[in-house]
Image (cartoon, rainbow, N blue to C red; front, side, top):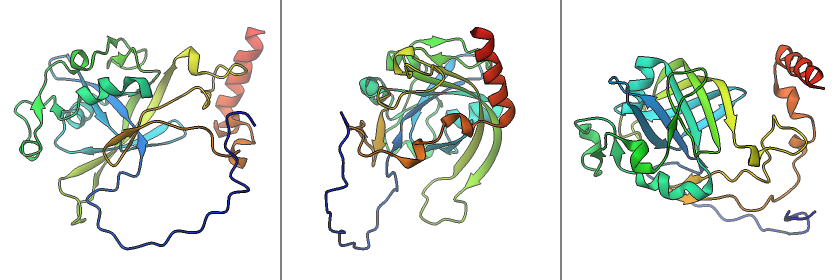
Length: 242
């Protein structure tokens, strides 16, 4: 199949393993630019890479001292903007910056500095959202409007975690996606052949390579992940449009 690397015929010997002691376990996740609203009504924008999704929900792992956590807890809202590989420079400009003034004590030794307008620093444009009061980042190909669902203390009894953390669960209430990353045969689905998210692995930036192998998990319709009532609503909308 064009563009796919088939591994069936490649015999790879299992590697020897050794016990290691890494400082962090950032194995590799998509970068998220979280926009939130400051107490004075101005937007904040913060990069993070500890996020995972289930259905229309997302869990965010964040430093408890961050301005983003403060804003989400106060407003109950945020937007998860997913940058593409090509926006790596915008993301990197936000590194070691905070919307908190003064800079939290735990971030001072690392070299963080206060920046009031982080959208401007990143070269990104804030635009209004549909369901939340927090602005989206116009240039990011995927923008997920979200509302706070639950907050959990994380790692309180874990001696390997340096600073207090929070695990924040959010509900996705609106999804925006650039048309050029959608499937040709289904405009409600993002095409993984077109979507090139920015990935962070052990604090370094990476992109996606080619599709390595056909996935049996992808053989059944993605629509089956939707709750039944939402599948019915989508079918009714499609019928109305024909």
